[in-house]
Length: 358
Image (cartoon, rainbow, N blue to C red):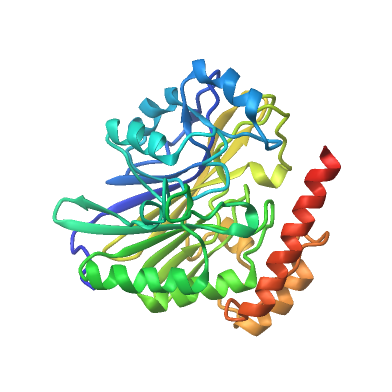
């Protein structure tokens, strides 16, 4: 794999769901001083005139979306790529092609969801100067990322064999392009990576990925390195405001208000964590500090397991995890049958929760 010999900085931001009546504001140092920025767009784009129909038909307690007013903000942050591989991309009842088209018209590429399996699984290849960068995005079915069919819309599935095979195919098709994998995984509000997914992230680096970046838990998790390549397990929210914006009140615990802009230099693999706090009172994202990812105090606080062998981490996670009520631990991504049983249990549990809510 050939990587850029010139300084090339990428910035990764977390979940963005921007309602029509509120735009993000940042105080202090901004999130980007980078050649390109990558975000997770948590929900499709929708103009305000469509919202009444959307909420009349909504089938989920929280229907997340993004106002088309966010597009100039994304451009101002230098966003060149948006991942759509998440559990809210179909909330609006629109095909992913709608959001992909609107983003493309604004000069922003997208990946990870599509109107069929081929579109959902297609990589994105960007060029910056003389450097190509290749991206893949995946969403975990357990957290309601709907898989696509041959002719039906959905999210590129986070199935380990499929993930590793996709990296291998892209490595062959783009031998000179670093591969960055964007993963929508783990349980909401879990502070630590699922053991099987931490194990999979390491296998992805071994298979040829240059970096693995995670989303979904709505809180920042830790950062580890494997073979000198960064794994940022969850960036947390970037702008998903608390309040009555998405059909039901949205609230997060205090630890979910710590936010991360993850900056990565491609040629040296140097990484920086630029930390922010979200204030739900005025919806401002306030800069706190910046630190080297490999040695920073806040990063170490979130990654006390850094370098821990897998079997030891499984035990550590069982003792320290936050989310417990009826939620199984996925211990090893290679345990296909056992994990299928866990998937089935969680599907039944989810059905029961929805039934209880009416």
